[in-house]
Image 1: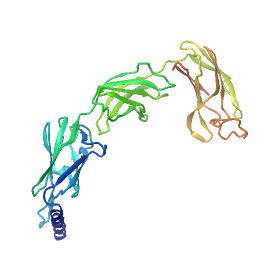
Image 2: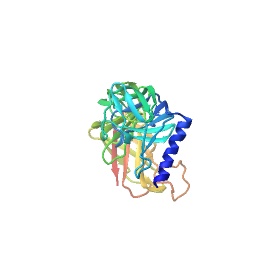
Image 3: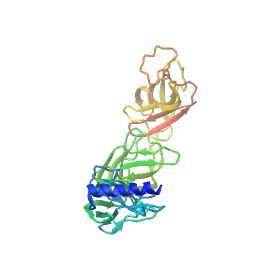
Image 4: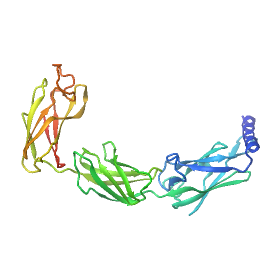
Length: 354
């Protein structure tokens, strides 16, 4: 085993020196999270257990065999150093040789072991072969700090039936590349915010999607280069409430759609003029294991305390008329169901049906 290993290592070096020479060339540094961005940006926090994986692109990267004729042959890789606001040399076990044109490195951060929190700024990247010769790439790496989250404002409050504008204040936001923003709470799937405008490095304009469940959420923001920060339990979503809802009739046949009246009583907001969105939350026969929001049809505003509508009991999502008496796309009979009314004002009300 010793002789073949030694021969392979010696062959690698001989071939590389014959074609490229001992002096490397460094053409670029790439963050795989943003391959088209130069200079590469990398966060001085986060990353996996070993840091952020980066790629060195060039030619003439030439490792040197060590102890080739012993039982423990080894390879000495080119040395990678960073110089800028601070100087740093990559540990040897954080460097990985792929071929003479490609090396990979894991850049430690304040959250890794070993840790190294590089000061933000521009760095020159240098690659030095073991046999001599150094290549340098000025401003080849930009180290950035993770963003901060300081304030959250919903200037219009929250609306169940539409997107609710949200202003996020902080620092370190990327004007050139929108971040990923998600809401998280225990026991629920993460909810991304889809409309994101970075107004400045300190302000983001976004919106909470309609029908986001009420509750208190963690907010997490992730910049494209990998920087991320989470503020726990900082955003409470709550909607203005309609008064107490009642239906007449409160039940109907499974074989036909049902016309109903929805009335309000007690405290809470009244119905606003305009077309409310009304949903029956129920399973349908085509997917009985999943409760879905089925929109009611022919919703009409009568007065501040009364709406009328048609519950598509037989139709479900299918357009009328339904000619099959078995109602194959209809609501699964038996309940329980929930009726949700979203008023044009943004207020919401619901009633459980059994």
